[in-house]
Length: 68
Image 1: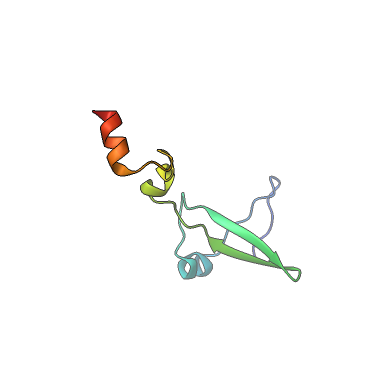
Image 2: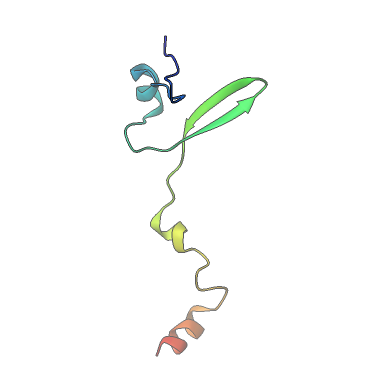
């Protein structure tokens, strides 16, 4: 049975890591639902999502004209 360390850390059992498809470096989220903790793998943002909306709401033609 996993126990908290002095730094309040816990090792996630191998069986659970395998089911969730998580490993070193993966981010996880915790949700609390009716006094139960739900653990799930955090979805990684794609590189496109990182820059979505960066150029505002301009049309492609307007952006290209400004860049020229």
